[in-house]
Structure formats: C-alpha cells, structure tokens
Image (cartoon, rainbow, N blue to C red):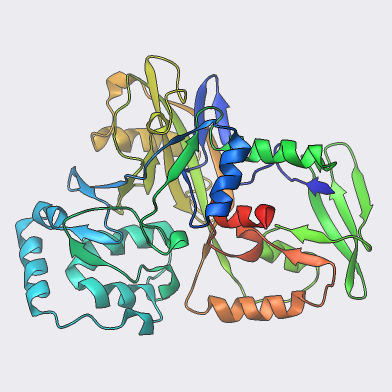
Length: 403
C-alpha cells in the first residue's frame, strides 16, 4: 500500500504545529466517539498516552461569557441578555404553542426558529452561523441544525457528528497534540508494509475504460507515474478537484475555508473553556481556543497561547489579507480577551481551503449526481471529510481504519 500525501506530513486536519515548544492543533480537537470499538482502537493506539478532557465551550458577547447553547439554552443565558431582549424571549416562550416538528423544515433558519423562537435564534444562532458558514442561512440545509434544542438549567455540549447527544468520554493525547493519533496510525501502516509519498501532488488521473489506470504525481524533484489499473484507489482528494481530474461535469459544491492564527502570550492559563465562540459580525474571528486547556505541555513554562480561527472562502479578501494577524491581536485586546502587557506575538498562520463542506439546501441532489458519475470507476473508492463532502468528525473518519 502506498499513501500519497500532498502535505509535508500525513493527517490532514489532524495536524499539530510546533513552534519552539508551543503546540497548536489546527482548531480545537478532542477525541470523542459514539462507537465504543473506535474509542478502544484509539486508546490502544495511544498506549495510555491520553487524558480525559471535557468539551466546555462558551460564547463571548456583550462583553461577557455565556454558556454553550447546543442543545440546551440555559436560563442563566436568558438572564444575562439585555432587559429588552430578555423580556422578548420570555414573552415568546409564554405565547409559543407546542413546538412544531422541526424535521419538516429544509433550511437552517426555519428549523431553529421553529424550536426556540425568533429572539433566541437571533441572539445565539443567526450572527455566528452566518459568520461561520458565510452564506444566507435560508440557503443552508437544516441538516446542519440541531433538532433537540430546548431551554433548561443544565448546560452540556452536543455536536452534529454525535447527533447533538451527550457523550460519556472524551480524550486527548498527553504529549504530541492531536497529531499523535495520526503519527501512531502511520507507524501501524509502516509495520504492515505500507509506505508514504509526502510532498506529492496528484497532478492528474488517467483512465482505461471503467478503471483508473494511472496516477501522475508531482514531487519536489520530479514527475512520477504510478500504474494503478490493478489496484484499489482510495481517494480523499477534495471532490471538485477529483471531478476535474476525471473530466466529470458537476454543479458547484462549496467548502468553507479556515485560517488559524497561532499566538504566543506571556502568563499562565487564562480560560476554563475548551473554546470560545464570538458572534459579533464586526469581529474577524469566529472562535478561539487555548491549548493549555488540553494539556500542560502545550506551552513552555511562564507562557500560554491562543489559536484563533477565521472562517472565509479561499482567495477572498480575508484569505489574502497580509495584515490578518495584526488585526486579530488588536481585536483580542479591544475585546479584553488578552492584554497588551502579555506581549502577544503571532508565531505562525495556517490555511486550509477545504475545512468544512457547506450543506446548502440542494447539496444532496448535487452529491447524488456526482457520485452517480463516479461509481462507474470500479477501482475507485471515495472516503474522508473533503473527499466525500461529509461533515465528519475524527471518530467517523477512523471507522475506515477500524472496520
């Protein structure tokens, strides 16, 4: 088996950057799984090099912290709202009939409003979701919306890839960051006789009838051809790129791009939150996380750090902004999240154009048309988040390694 990797190391989004002892994952990663077999596989892979870490996100707005709102919007959150908006919420709750069946709604906005009313939707979902996904929320599929929203006293975290349910266990590697999972998988592949071609870009694919017969690869030094006619090809290539290589016409599907800015700070750990959401549309970034929350080895003694996430589209104004790091630091200071006395310094910036598949209301039809055309290739299998255009979490990707 040969694994062809465009990047300098395997793992895709399962990546950890090391800047002289400051460790940053590409966005916050905690390993969780609804599948006990997958969880056991990862624990065995890490050989006890893991610890229990709980997802405990927060929202920052109006200059204060609010509880996470999926799937429970706490009464505490409602109490923190400005008086006029709090009164609107309470009135809507009193006057709302029994919640409608939210599964009948096609778009994100209508699905959320049907469960919690307009005011709570505007306060806790509209601005952030529009910033994160970058499209009109009437055009975003209800598949991305939680269907079990409610108002209650106890907060907990639920995610799309775990059906917005509470999970009993979440883990994180003690050393090495989240990449440790990918590194251990790589060791396992090599022991089984597999090899890796790193820094290798697939330039094109050639077909012979109903089989992909050749893979043409560009490396740093040369162009290489691999005869693949008799072999199974498992592709995680972004779906639009794969279609172009195979001369398949397709209707546009969208990916949301992400930029991570890695910032060094003087001082000790600042937050008890696994990550923090920023709803204000005037704030460039959507989410931040502090690596020291995940493990004490993420920064040298006497320092902490932040990974700041900015969502955008590839090659838009934000993607090409040469001063993005400086702007992010200025806004972190202006919001009071950090202080200038902490001497913030941008250690690095990482970009990924295919971070999140955007489920528009018509995405399923578009995917059906694409996969109907791809299935003619007998030796081609499509997997992975970018490859299959599926909003998959780590455990769902690792199912392919386990089963």
